[in-house]
Length: 55
Image 1 (cartoon, one colour):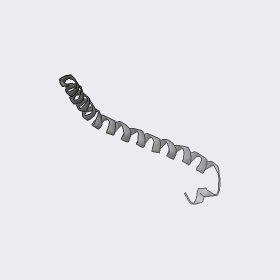
Image 2: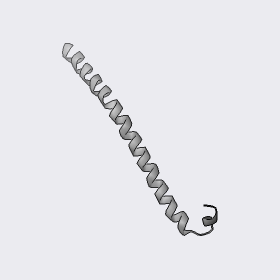
Image 3: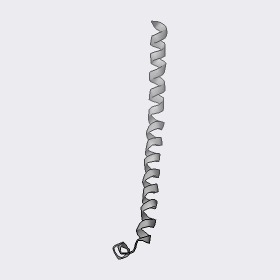
Image 4: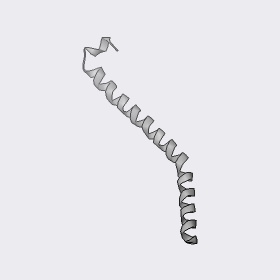
């Protein structure tokens, strides 16, 4: 890495790959949290609908 810092092409190639890897990791984390929190949101909406029907 330190040897290739003098030239511009390897840094130009490394930066987009790191950027896409970070985006991919963030996308997977967001999907993971949405998969966890979707049932909780559905249960909350069902409870709120039941409360609305009672009132």
